[in-house]
Amino acid sequence: MIPGYRPVVKHLTDVSRMGYGAMQLAGPHVFGPPADPEEAKRVLVRALDLGVDHIDTSDFYGPFVTNEIIREALHPYDRDLCIVTKVGARRDDEGNWLPDFEPESIRRQVHDNLGRLGTDRLGGVNLRLMDPSADFRAQWEVLAELQSEGLIGDLGLSEVTAEHVATAQEIAPVACVQNQFNIAQRGDDPLIASLAEQGVLYVPYFPLGGFTPFDTTELDRIGASYDATGRQVALAWLLQHSPNILLIPGTSSVAHLEENVAARDLVLSDEDVAALDSLHPA
Picture: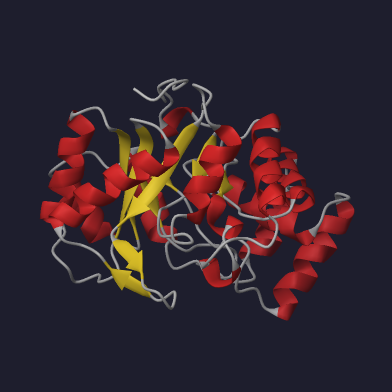
């Protein structure tokens, strides 16, 4: 056991709904080191100070950069911290995203994440499907084995459909799904509702991306009535959209982190929620 290690025991079902995505702690295009490594560490420390207990990361951010920064900033980890990583991809020397999907590669990636983070148990692992037509049963079985060995708390899927979830559920429980979703990208509305009925969490990535100029104008207009920013309104809308949604907005700035986390206390009126719903109907 690593000196100073305290086992991670918190599951995703127990975390605060406002987490933190570490992707932006790497350099431009999620490749290479950050311009200010010390600020990156301050962001992580401040996140925990603000009550964040769910960090989303991966060895292919950097690659390896975010996990190394997380370890430098936060190890030994608080027992209440749930660190979730992703497997199924790798980066080449030019920063391209490539599949790394053989079952033994999945096993190796889990152990690599454990090693770089400096822990012997991950709060969760998401299997990313870069090819939606790929048969992923063998890979999911590997993750289920590692979970049974006590190395993983929860299992999740990324870039998937309802059919993928149903297939995985036949092998091992799916705790969460991580797909792209926000006010402007609402293709997963039926999936979110179905997952809520199953007790499966939904973790949208890019919660603040892809807005049109009109979207931004409306978000800012509504935000002004709450003394809030449009970004905060967009995050608050997600939290009110469905009770099974967990957020992991990312940033490399302490000021933006504080702004994002403050959105968890913003409650939008039914009228404002309806106005935002109408921007891009499901």
